[in-house]
Image (tube, rainbow, N blue to C red; front, side, top):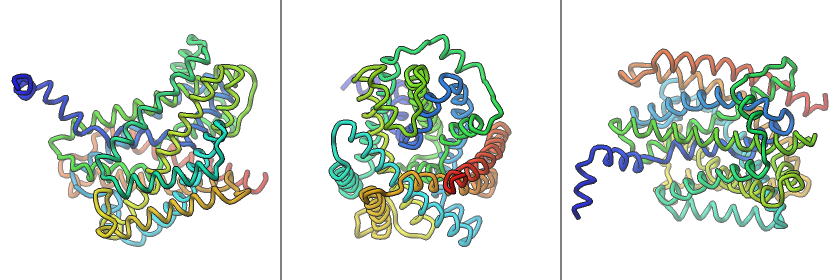
Length: 421
């Protein structure tokens, strides 16, 4: 056992082992950001604008790091979830308003994830009437029969699988000189479609439910204040992985679809369209990534919703609890899953309309959540001496302003599409 003693007495090795123990919430939350909606956004951006929008991933990364770090810090310092803190500091009425909207949006978002499951497996010849119920049952068993540690390990494995998009991009044989120019040389055009896409890429990195899940995951893992620096690096790794995946999705679609003038409407279209230009393997790997991302998010979305609703209203919540110990938590989780699955299985269900309006609800609620977060994380009564510094506040408030602008554009754009204008 001499090697074990050497590890215990080596400060660097001890720090690394502590980091591995803390690892999880940041990587999982960041990776779930690349859900079916996110993959669609990146695919359409690459297909429509080639490499010219790669630069948007830099501000996206900064925004994601700042917001996720604030969540992690609040959870570690207070030991309370974001929903709990909002109720305590802003009252039950505002909390109820936020959560009614979030539950409605998350049902739509979860339905969109199951649509991603159905679409990705249809490429492999599997009917949605088989794939969607099977995935739903698998997710239910994982959450109800497993525990937080088991679920976290599976979610971390899913996060690694999302790196499969690197393969699709390499098989597409991109022009790396053009990729470099697109990444480091910002290009702005003041037409509504281009501006909406820029804001969409930045905005898709932050969703309201992600903030609640991140904070709840930190608490569920029981990370202590003295371990904060390890959780900070967990956030950095998660955000980096998120942007890397987004980068290679955009590169794959730019090198094939944009180069050949193809227009797509969703991520499934990108997987199909890649086949004649980058080969069967690139197409199948892209579809596999979409499947993993959709299953991943189909599990996390209703889980996050059940977490923050139960936190806000004082019910027991957590994967480590049995159904009898947290009946409201599991009932809400099951309700969201069931409704989402039924929506997908309805023949001719208006999936595009559901997706659009769930995004509108997310966009309307996001600034409210961010403003609440920034106010609380700067409150010495709540955070002690671990309030934001000037840089964090500058990024936080400026990002909030940008996202409010995104909200306005998204609402008007979506309303126009919904009413046929």
